[in-house]
Image (cartoon, rainbow, N blue to C red; front, side, top):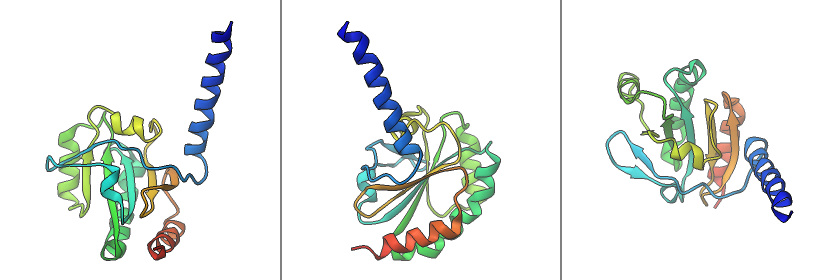
Length: 166
């Protein structure tokens, strides 16, 4: 009998947590997933501390992702010298050769990771829709989640505010 109450309660809690991550601003800590970069090195959310970091889950087959990438590059180049970083995380279904080719031909100036197992997407709120982008503050807290292309004017305003924080 108690199990019958426990399952709906856990399910409702999971839905509420997911809704909090999906909609609105969230001040939860960035998950400690390990990102394996194209150069074979790895990063975790601990590496984001002290910087404002954009974590972008994307795919080479996603037209919106490809279309927004020049704006992500431009934003990175505009703020990188002030303590801003970007990590582009390719989804598990994206062929690694496509990701390497994309990053190389477009000369992406920031780190690109392959999420071969899908573990990073799962840890970051079970990301399934691309693009999904997170903005993480200097303390390693997620302050904004965007599903779809962000409004880059609003994003830059938020980046400015976060960079100004001590």
